[in-house]
Length: 477
Image 1 (tube, rainbow, N blue to C red):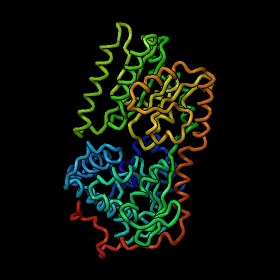
Image 2: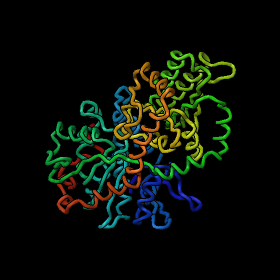
Image 3: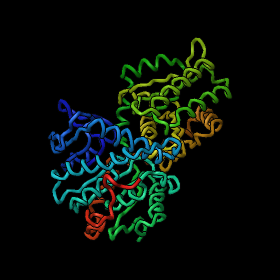
Image 4: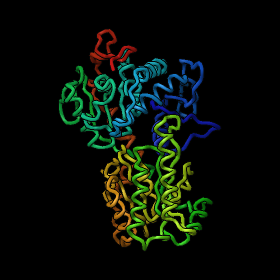
């Protein structure tokens, strides 16, 4: 398993988290290696991974230099790949040294991973940080099965082509055996990019031939630990924060939003929609409270620093213009809330407001549904631009750019009859119980393990001498 951040256990425990739990669970069953960045920057990082053994899992991590961090992570990954994949071309920053840094770090990580690999290892690479990793491993002579999963959206070709080194990135995908996306739309967008750039050729449904190598492409929507979250929500009434919050609300209904601070989450539009709802429905004044929990994210990136100020100012302006002495319409929390407390807050909410402008999946939407009381569930309002909209058919789907329509959906949800709320919730819970995070892991790994031997044949681009694979310091932008 390869991911940007690796949760190395400390004091005998590992870090909890939806995806982390899933990946760790997959490794615990079979045993294996989890490789990636330690999360630390040091002056002179070693090229040898630090290894920690915990049960059947070997955790292996590398530190980064500040230069590598600035160029690979804060730079190309989060100022070029992230905005393009979220359809925000206006925020793309293209710096040649950051592009070089991205490929340089991938090359260094491949070289450090190489001594730890065995010939029969199945390798699963995660997310946009490591797109070139398989190609670098192929250059080193590895013929293992290698799969890749993208946890963010993949845009259509007219948008994706704004990426620096666009063709080289697409060519690099050809070193994988199986490529997974959250939605059929993302998988289709990606295949159309390959066709439009004349990189290989389609050979069948979900298959593409690149340099004589068959790459399979499909949708694998990630799930959550559904039953685990149900249990956490049911027992969260004893949580101190949940009890205090419930007491502070009185008889008001709770609307909740939980998002990492990011421009893709549509926070400005969401607060404006809530303001529009209150102005358009004065009978709900002092009868509802909207809590927005937004942990800080990437605070060293200028765009995120500016956004943090803007959202805080907007929440303050909304409270100043709409609030009353005994009522604060928006409670904006710029910090983290524990897993148990979050489950309890979801459970006591009448509405889950999940309205990103673009999202690969959005597990908050699924967690909100799983946390509800079966006899009196809340309503999920969900952006049609979130991957979760492909599965959660019981949600009220909205266009987050349409402020008045979102406001009307809030009013509709608050007035929704109990019978309709139950029907919608039952439909969504059926999906969540079938498509758990464990099932997601099993589907992808089974697909990768079941690939025919033909798909493991080396292809032209793994030959470092043929010049076809231009991931080098001199790669053209």
